[in-house]
Length: 190
Image (cartoon, rainbow, N blue to C red; front, side, top):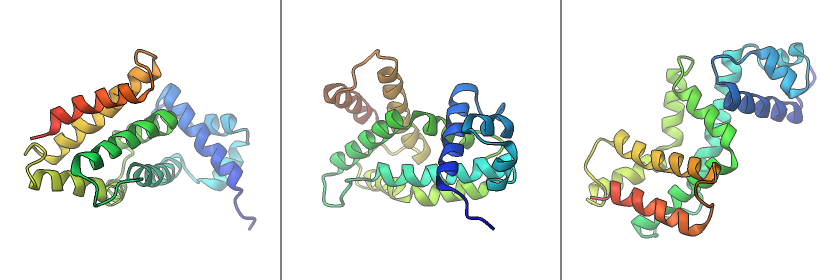
């Protein structure tokens, strides 16, 4: 059997991300993915036997990259607020740089196709982030609220800031990032 071509796999992933960002996950078809990726539908099925397998694998691949990216430059010796600021900034930059991929992840996560196995996979990948939130609560730096609410506040701040930057309502500069993070920090700090 011939090995799978990395370029074709990248084309499949990008086509899927772009289509989901434009039209949503529920209307996604293998034929449309293949057409957008510039290949025959039969070729797509060589790589992924079903839509479910395709979106599950793409989610795992994208989530792996996202989880690594958000923890870049976060060192244990850094002051706590600086570590949270770094994660917030990494999330923002990733969302701005990989918009279609992030939209895909969010839609898949909130869809009926999202499996318990992928939920566990996601939780394992994000363990460092969740541990940082828990550390802040244990040290009474962050509000003593349920962890999912705390996480949603931080991620929601990033999402809305990115949307404002993408629509050019705000500039993509350090002053804007700092103001937005300060608002987020004020919302989650104890």
